[in-house]
Amino acid sequence: MAECLLRKIEVDLVAGRLRTIGKGGKAIDHPITSEMRAILMAEMANPTDFVFTYAAARAKRDKKGQKGHPKGARLPITPSGLKTLWRRAKRPRASGPSLPSDLRFHDLRHDFATKLLRETGNLRLVQRALHHSKIETTTRYAHVLDEEVAAGMEAASKSRKKSRTAG
Image (cartoon, rainbow, N blue to C red; front, side):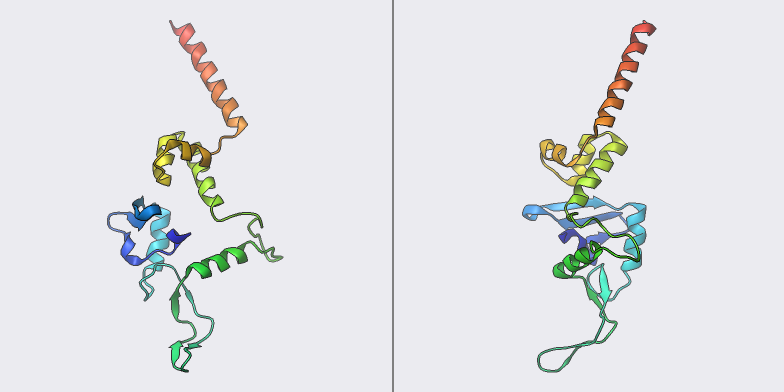
């Protein structure tokens, strides 16, 4: 979740990289996709040090009655604000789709790993994308369906038959 609270200094659009700090203070280097670039470019124009912001719904005054910020001011999204947005996204709505109520934010990481593995078939690539030091950790994230195992076994069987008849 903390990686969603990007600072502009962590974004290098020229090099196409995000440079953040991960677990244990480890520097993490993420490539920027074309879709990410479009989102980042739209957000970089805001007047704060943070990439993602929101418009203040009302003016705020500090405890001494001094003006804190005006209505509509761009403010950075905070960790608690992000959690609030996540909870709201999971609320059932009559106006449109909502996220499943039991979906955890971390589940998105598992979903990403699974989709990347399906698209590439490369577990090492998924390991690097998730910045795991051990491949065993990655195998817990990237899920394989029974249908995919069956399709893989079928393809291997056809390949084996071809090699026997070719010789």
